Length: 349
Ligand SMILES: *[C@@H]1O[C@H](CO)[C@@H](O)[C@H](O)[C@H]1NC(C)=O
Ligand SMILES: *[C@@H]1O[C@H](CO)[C@@H](O)[C@H](O)[C@H]1NC(C)=O
Ligand SMILES: *[C@@H]1O[C@H](CO)[C@@H](O)[C@H](O)[C@H]1NC(C)=O
Ligand SMILES: *[C@@H]1O[C@H](CO)[C@@H](O)[C@H](O)[C@H]1NC(C)=O
Ligand SMILES: *[C@@H]1O[C@H](CO)[C@@H](O)[C@H](O)[C@H]1NC(C)=O
View 1 (cartoon, helix red, strand yellow):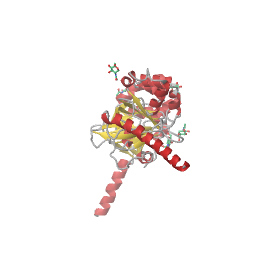
View 2 (cartoon, rainbow, N blue to C red; view 1 turned 120 degrees about the horizontal axis):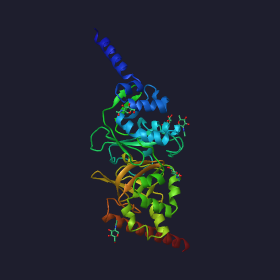
View 3 (tube, helix red, strand yellow; view 1 turned 30 degrees about the vertical axis):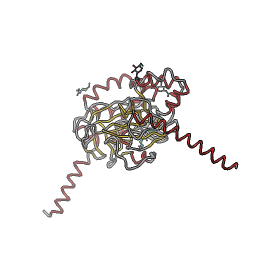
View 4 (spheres, rainbow, N blue to C red; view 1 turned 45 degrees about the vertical axis):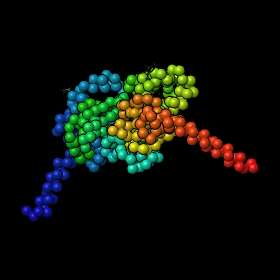
């Protein structure tokens, strides 16, 4: 046979192998419980057009059986919710990093915080996403050991699903098997207690900021762990607490860790900017270290941090520089005021 014809035949066979529908490939690979869930909840999702480049996070049969009890008991009468659970499993393979990165004012050449990707999902129900008009919810996929392949997927309420097998191609993308369902993101009020951050929630309630934060779109919440609030929030005045809390939020930027770059600066709700520092695989934002990252919330992402974010973040992690920077900011501010007075005086002369 002519080599070119052989090549043509081979690529035809390859095409045949890969041009299998989602349904067939799920069935052939024993992911039958998830297939059944999709058939029952939103069969349209099975009609993925060929060439779509989707990632389908398929929970193993054990995972579906383990969680379907909860899904069925809670949501059996809520068809729309069941559809959203199904949609949450299907993700566009294009990373959204280039879209979000334009928000950052720091250097563009910094090192990425974590090897990972942020994906837009098909989840679009208004109860579960408020990232701005027409924007679907996201999930974060990361390699935790430094391996070149994705190892875990982070979704609502800080849930982490592990990738348990290699990708399985189908005609509309790949199936990526995982060991549990991805969890629907909830609003901040519901997420905070579930993440063990009750003291931060109380502080937000006391200052009336909780509702403001809940209703905003596209935020990064840097929630200090309970022990960080113990000695401060109870005796601070409401005004001081309010200012401190406003520094814990990055506005107009859901800062999923794969998007955070070393030395990049981000604006807080308090009007200041904070710098990201990445050192020894640890991420610091405004001097606070991220202890638990990438809990997806309805209107963005939440990271648990070890302490309050400082007003102007230090060029390197705390504690030494944090205090010094606080000082230098106020000094700087004071110099500007003095110069302003000098100019005004010059004019009057
Ligand atoms: C999951 O549950 C279904 C229905 O109850 C059952 O038929 C199936 O064998 C179970 N699969 C596994 C892997 O436990
Ligand atoms: C958002 O989700 C809907 C429904 O799941 C889907 O049809 C649409 O293509 C998605 N949009 C984007 C921009 O991802
Ligand atoms: C979600 O997407 C579907 C399909 O594109 C659309 O029919 C539905 O109206 C969208 N829902 C919302 C809340 O945008
Ligand atoms: C947050 O979500 C819960 C349900 O999870 C709901 O009862 C509550 O009203 C929501 N709060 C806000 C401010 O949207
Ligand atoms: C809070 O204050 C107590 C008593 O002064 C101290 O022992 C504890 O370490 C402090 N906790 C934090 C998180 O600073």
